[in-house]
Length: 431
Ligand SMILES: [Zn+2]
Ligand SMILES: [Zn+2]
Image (cartoon, rainbow, N blue to C red; front, side, top):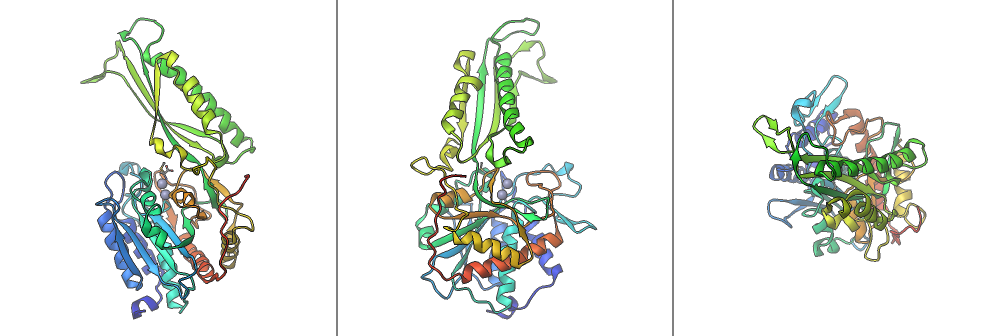
């Protein structure tokens, strides 16, 4: 290792590196991937990590870093993070979303501060410290910085996980993103809900704005929206009553409504439109009955009897948490999966607390690795932090960020030293 990688850093240097990454605007739909890649490669260089830039799709670089272990015959560790972030409504933030402004309380404001540039940088900072301490991994540690997670991961983690390059890495365990926790317990995820993006469309006869008649497009879509709302409430009630966790019910939220006849001043008011569309973000627990939900959509939310049609955008995602035989893909949390116990111990050793394993309520790239038969754990060490991913004023306190580095230091040390040839079971038969 060169001298720069073996010298330790002050907190302010660590925070300023985090800020640099946050200041690169990698918001969809036009992320500055090249700038992000350059930054990660220069960090990797300062750490003397081996690096490779993979472009499964031109213009969408995936950076793969390697810290070679002393026993390459053992399956490796993969630390994954995505480089893109969701867009931000700049004028609704207290501080510009790509400024990475640190307020007097130590809160670092930036899009991506929680989701998930924190994790990507924490991996690197943890490795920086381990190297400085003279630690040598037994297993090889890989880091992947992948594009396009926020738009489905098809040109990023999905292609990577299916590639021969990936197979050659002989990965044994993947760590990917989790969620912030308002309590003092960190959260860890063994599975995730499956996303369906549903668009329903109603058509009907146009007519005078004053006329009451049946089967207008607006009436038809409103009936559907009411039906969706009732179903949503039934699921939400289970969560409110404490009977189910967020990841164990079906969520459905309206993402857009599109109808009306535009005019220079807004919309034509005295014309009932002949078409109306609504879009919904639906998330389905891995063990839920997908067929019955599809039936509900066809019969209640978009019945042809009401002149309605539907399509599931990103239809491919439909089976994203089911394997080829329709079995849900879950990472074991019991003794068949040594990585889970190792994670718990490592977090404890670094003075952190871990809550019960959960189903991730949204979606992550971890599903693509689980589909390859690998165990994958969703984990972002942010305790005492409000959940602000995809929200205005996303922030992470700098002390929490620094604490997270120590947590990863402990995890990476433990994972990469684990010398057993683990039988890494991926399956769990029941929740
Ligand atoms: Zn994310
Ligand atoms: Zn996200």
